Amino acid sequence: MESSLHSYVKWYIDARNEFCRRVYIDRSTWLKRKLMPFIDWDSEELLPRESDFAIAALSELKGRALAKHSISLAILTLSNRSEYLSDQADANTTFASLIVVMLAFFSLTLVPWLKLLVASVAFCGLVWLMLQRIELRGKVAYYKEIINLLKQYESRHA
Image (cartoon, rainbow, N blue to C red; front, side, top):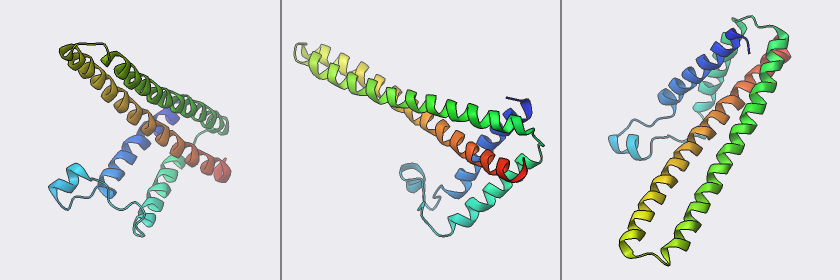
């Protein structure tokens, strides 16, 4: 991927994170900010803001003057990468299920203090797998958004 396109991907992820922090986080109370941070995703007022962000992202892409073959190759590369990451996220769910089954099986024969130790290790593994899945699904979402922007740009400008 050419460096201009690579820097655009980095710019988009940073800009999208900032946009989500500014628009989607409910800051009315400390409790909502910590426990239920997201406002109503289906609110009518969010569509114009999303549209403005998409227009800004497209204008940023237009300002980079990318070659047509670079855009097509980036669409292909990001599509393949998002499929791979999606597969990895699904594998984490499978591993978490296996850990739970393993814990249930081993807990039948262990002494109580060893059950607690095994359960603690399994819990840490489950939390780690869940955090990995959340991170991977976030990357898939970013890549799919960028793919949509690149396809829109390609159909209009390239």
